[in-house]
Image 1 (tube, rainbow, N blue to C red):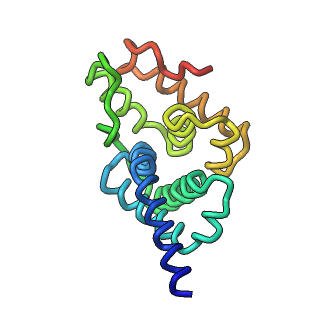
Image 2: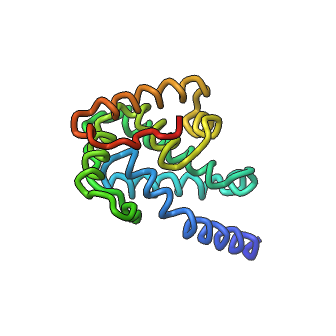
Length: 172
């Protein structure tokens, strides 16, 4: 029994090492603050560890833990709604030739979206998930994803600080 637990613990450590950066980026874009994002990832991984048997048996353990992360964010947001201002994204370089002011304006506008719209936009356009995957991650219908994404993108497009940018929501 001890060897089996040690093997499961090692498997979880390897998973955590490979998933941490991506989960942190997603949490940061959802929460708007690095410390809150780290807390969210830690809480999600704690829950994943407790349910590791179910997580590792899932078709996509990363998607399972991402869903836990989104649920943790939703719980936190329901308990204490507040304004978020996203100023930078950790561990992700800006595209070559990108204007840092444009990036800051886009992240600030993203931080001003309501939580569900921000979730939909982040998962669809940052994480590059399909509508079906995003719906599964958010625990809602594909129609809700389409609606929340469209509303979020419309707000981003209408933001006066983003008038010079042309590639917001270029996926269609």
